[in-house]
Length: 475
Ligand code: ADQ
Image 1 (tube, rainbow, N blue to C red):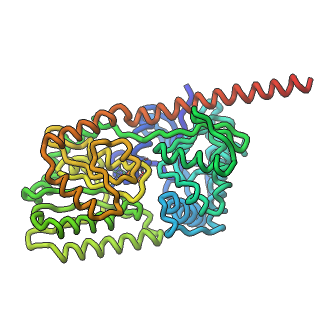
Image 2 (cartoon, protein in one colour):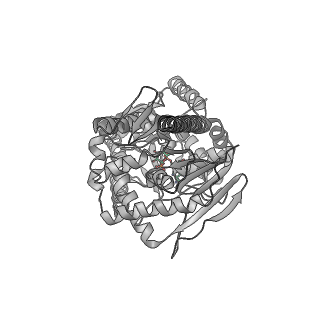
Image 3 (cartoon, protein in one colour):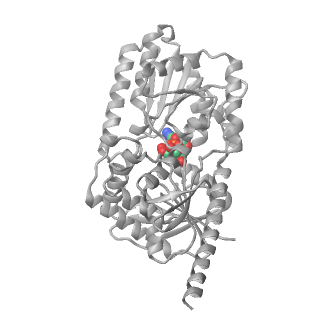
């Protein structure tokens, strides 16, 4: 059996039960626990010089972690990854900044990480690389002579060519991506954007079976929407209902309805617009005053990137302003909490609420939307209000889908959700649970890895045939 080597910028916290607020870490860890394997990536620590990986085993997962120097961190992580790629890939060119030095650092760190990983590799390993920090990682491994199958999954959106081209080294990046054997996107639209870039720019061609031929390489490009384990989440949500935090939330509501939102504090998540649409609900429908609260849980991330400091300030300002305008002695309209929670507890909190309010301006998938639905009591489920710009909107037909730029529409959807009759809520919930079971996290992982094995075998057969043909022709 070949080993699975997962590579991502950060590995999930190695300590069991520590909250990991990040969709990639949560998805990948759940997927890796079943198959076992090695997880290679940054430990989260800054060090003075690159060193050999630290190896730690937990159950059937081996963690191989390395530190980054302060310069690496600034240029590769804070710089090109999070000040250029993240905003642009989320269609926020206005927040994107490009710096040549940061890009050089991004390339350098990818090359260093590839060297560090190479030392751990066996010829039969299969390598699965994750996310935008590592777009050129396969090219770096190939330059070191690594021949193993290498797949890549992008957790965030892939922008349309016009937007991608605002990143100066766009072509170098896409060319490097073509060193992978399989590239996976969250949605069909993201896959199409990549293929459009290749075809409209005349860099290559694609065929109906998802194969792309570009820059002298054949690779498979597909949509592999990430899933969750809905039944395990439902069970956890039910079991954790008696926890103290859940009880105090329930008691504190005193019969009021609860709208719940959980995100990393990020400008792509549409938090400001969300607060303002809730304000519009209170303006348009005064009957809800004192009868509904919005709980927003949003732990800060990337707090040393300037745009993240700004969104935090704006949001605190908005929460204060709206509360100041509407609050009563015994009612606070918006409760805004800046902290992480244990995952199972979060699911139990979801179960207490009547509305899941998930309205990113752009999101690769958005696992919170899926977790919210899975956490509900099927006998009395809450309603999901979901942005059309989350990948999850393609997969959750029972949600009330909204445009997060239309505050009035969001306010109307909230009102409809708060007043929805039980039979409709039950039907919508059932409509979403079934597809989530059919496309759970194991299906995501297995479909991707099956394609990777298949494509890698097919290309090595093609490569051997080409070599043989060359030898025969020249003899
Ligand atoms: P994220 O942008 O992190 O993920 P999301 O998919 O919603 O977004 O995942 C967040 C995860 O963190 C969820 O599992 C959630 O429960 C957890 N979480 C959020 N806030 C938390 C808190 N306060 N305490 C504890 N846990 C918290 C990226 C992409 C997404 C994509 C995922 C997975 O941006 O589009 O869905 O990867 O591919």
